[in-house]
Length: 301
Image (cartoon, rainbow, N blue to C red; front, side, top):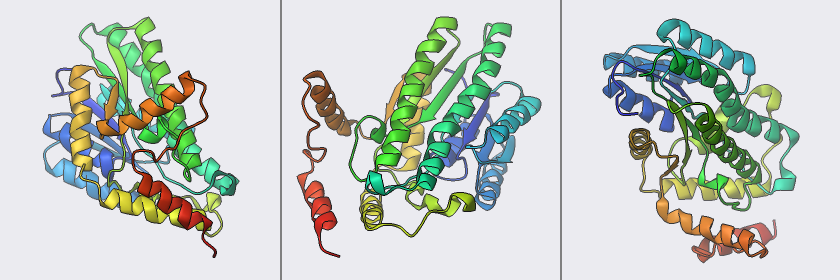
């Protein structure tokens, strides 16, 4: 996608983090912006900011895990602006802990948002974009799905999140290949960020009451503390990642990384697979982190 002015972006998780930063760039590029988020107050503030910069904005409050609400988003966007040119399926939540300690509610919440939210976005917007492409030879469309480096490796003590993000990587790669079968005008990318301050470590604030879980387990508390520390010490900002997204749109690049140096762990994992080795130490490149986590989990209460 080489041109953005006068085109339409649809962004989920648009009230904070990557979503808000992508909305800011989209507005500066002259795009019309559909901003969707589950947190009404934050959405109102974010949409007000983007609108104040002169962009046409359609705010839409929704829970992406609910199919009917994403269907309503797609219809509202179509009626207001027509078929979008850029869809950013970005809404996400985090949940850690030892995988056998996660409750059914944890699984339903994380997979509902992180995976099914992307599924609903792809299912609703892709046909609309393909129809626009069939009607206009000049139409360009691009879908970006937010996964994570946790979708390419399997760090311990965050299994539910890993599962959801591996699924998004698989979905996105398949979407890319499926689109190539039918069109040259619509394509896809996957965003795989590492530790970036976005607010995802505090996503419990938006967990629906019906999926409330018990008090956090010890492993979840430890995971939360380590995640907060890693995010807080990071040097790559959400605004930088948003810029990477737009660079990928221009270059039609599929994989988008915030920390390319983290790919060493991906290479180690793939070598394990190819050589039929048992999974290696995920902390081989930062042994002090692994030692700290093991010590914390094995310590007496």
